[in-house]
Image (spheres, rainbow over the protein chains, first blue to last red):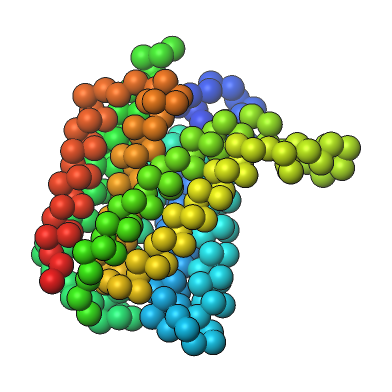
Length: 141
Length: 124
């Protein structure tokens, strides 16, 4: 837990001023989870729009989904610039969980074991991939 | 609702574009600024920043393909296929940004592929 409360940049830059400005990892993780909620609700809007396509509100739904994506992407880029990407990036993979839940609620799609196993595999893969990226960066120095 | 095979393939192809976009964005990020004073003096910083422009348009292309695919399939199956973006951006980064592929990265790639196969195996 203590590890989570340390500002993210302390792992890389041992500059006191920078560390004071940096966002604590736990807060950053919370913001990333909010972003994933944004992107997954954007996906739900796209699905609604795609199902209603030739009808009137479809284009607005799709556009609003785009706006949600853009907001989330901007916040994420800002956070990744400030914080430790290899910690924050796997948290972003949680949106596969939200999308599964939303699809169950709004479109009555099935919860199957295979889907959840797949999502679990993908999240584990994302964690390992970002660990690997961190290792690569260290080796370069 | 059943999922069509070509919707799955369409999403898989769209991940190529969404994997290319961070590469272009990274190339454009050096010149990127939102400082209004600098932009007023030199608008070409944002308007002629081809890295950022191509990066964002790649993302838009891939999301349009996604919206088209969503009409012909279940959301909970098509969305996890988007995670192939991790792999394609990783491979493009090794090609264009000269980042190294380590054993750990390859094992992460393998896990993601297994996950995507599991999800697509669950479709009717």
